[in-house]
Length: 118
Image 1 (cartoon, rainbow, N blue to C red):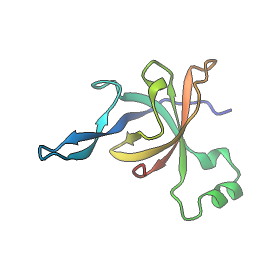
Image 2: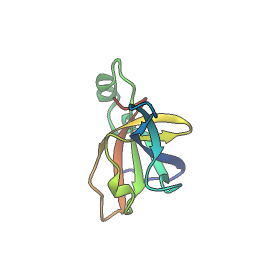
Image 3: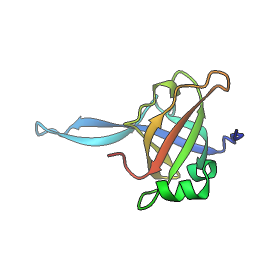
Image 4: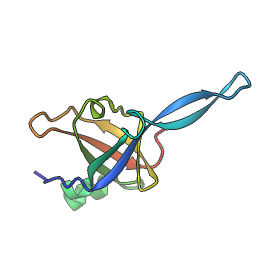
């Protein structure tokens, strides 16, 4: 088991459609969980640290590497969805999966990948 160090500031964002004034819409990313409430402290580390080198290489050939992101569970973080993204140091990361909250540890773990969600 890995001991989390919550030392990375992250922001959760959701894609929303905004009217463009001409009858259509544009797509924008907006911070979720309320103004400034989308910001959380997280522990982030490469999935490769949890696998053997051979498994990590086989699973990432031609792909951006996956990371695990763990945040403390609260009413807001329990609403995070896999079609959102998380911003870390100005870089977007797609949220690939969100695990059920770990009630014993008071955390939620997600698998993320650098780049925009598809």
